[in-house]
Length: 404
Figure 1 (cartoon, one colour):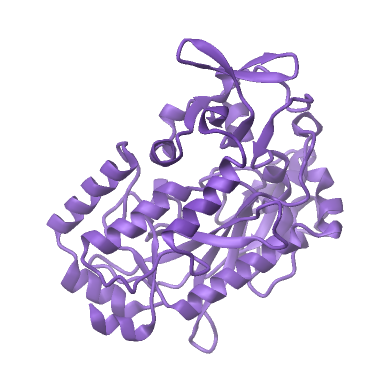
Figure 2 (cartoon, rainbow, N blue to C red):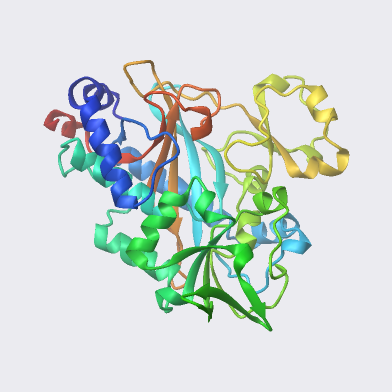
């Protein structure tokens, strides 16, 4: 982390006018209004710490693809959601870390959660690139992982999302995509790759094929870039034109089974220095006396839904015993107040977004996402306040601070 750079940015680079220009440029780039809070400042990270993020995320993702873990995680997939033809590895993965202070006063990482599911690949690219350009920062500040150039980054995403399909044969499928907060990512991908976001409920099934309506006719779908979240489909009672268990002649760019396998379900079974103590509620021999030192989390939920920060025995007892397998207790993480802002010190979570193409032996970190704020929970919905919300990372060495 580069706290000196964060302060210099806030005090000498940022102005309300520049931020307004940045917001305007960002919405123009993604071709869509942004309905969540966009933080005024990017998160400045050293290349050394960037490498720590890359290594930790890669190691954790690899653990989720071992034969041992795949056998363990069979029970993570509800039978009604078990999709055939699952690949051996997740095509997309994201790993979220909290930034903490270590005992030696250095910066460290603690694993918050992970997902075998794609994230905001297009939006985060434009956030970081335009933050560097609009605020007039040196081009030595980079924004991709693995030293990727812009061209390499987009080539990898095209290979992952399109494979050998034409853009019109691929759909980005979500539930009511025009209403999703992630819509800016969808519209940016449509502009760059030519794939359209469609409501997963609007697809049509004929035999073993899926079709989408386009230009007055039903067009076969060869590949689905899957952004549909099962718990949201359940919450709204969405009616799909197919069953997840159906044998359908379609390729999944992001196989749905990995949403369950690589999830908070994995946390009790991983071994990594960044991992806080985590227990499945159903596997606890006894309830810890110091419950206030833990956080209660449902396995399958996004954006902090259902999280209890200070659980009590009453909270646990209120959960039906048959639902205990779907909750974890995770040791509370002491986030570091490491991000200077003019209105107070922020904490931060850093997300590593990875791609694992079928021909690769290992996953590759490609892009960062950051969430920062002063609320008890880190999601953007909880940090709708100045100098907080959605952010991105710029990477540079310490001496780059002098080039501000």
